[in-house]
Amino acid sequence: NDMREIYQILTALECTAAELSAQRQPTERQLEPLVAATKAMDKALKANDLEAWAAADERFHAYLVELAGNRQLQATVLNYWDRAHRARMFTLRLRPKPVNSTKEHMQMVERLRAGDAEGAVAVTRAHRARATVELIAIFERYRLQLGKRGVTVETGGPSRHTAVLREADLAPLLLGETSSTALAAAGRLRFTTAAARTLAASLFPATGWWRPSLDDLLA
Image (cartoon, rainbow, N blue to C red; front, side):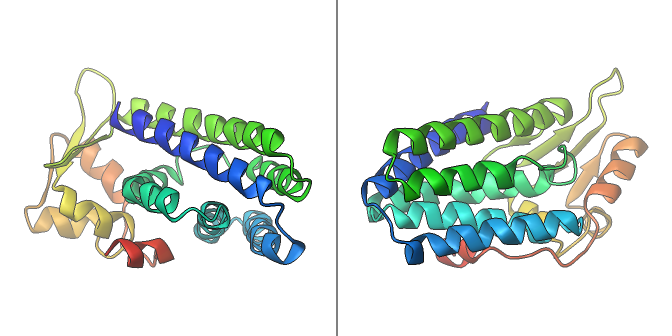
């Protein structure tokens, strides 16, 4: 429920950003970062490089908010961006291949180029709605709960396979700075079943995850 509410808020905020950006009638130079990010997404997807795709996707959405020229709006988005980013990284390899995002981003750019505020809002809302449905479906399947005191991951079935860790350990785990095996060995990640341990080891190896620039602003 928390993530559903967060994505509802982010959808509303990005729609406002799209409306404001279109009303400003951005120049081709101002739109170039959006176009470049979308091209980078397409290239990464063709190479099956999901980490590079996610980095480019986040650049697109971050710049869209910046383009609106409203610092209070940008600051409000940042209040929710961190948890949304962690959730997206968790679901990155579990969701369907994001083949529609490039097309939807270019549609967004075209509406901004035309100064069509209503059209930009419509495309942004549809884009966010589709992505949210995919993400929430994964959250419901694995029963991922991001709370103030900890994080719980469960899979369905009578055995209730569960992994529990502190919220402070979630970011390093998702970013590949540590692994589920290392956290478990330190007593900071607990499992109810062997299946839960195996799933966590598969989802969370130690690897070189990308670090979004917005993390620096949030620090």
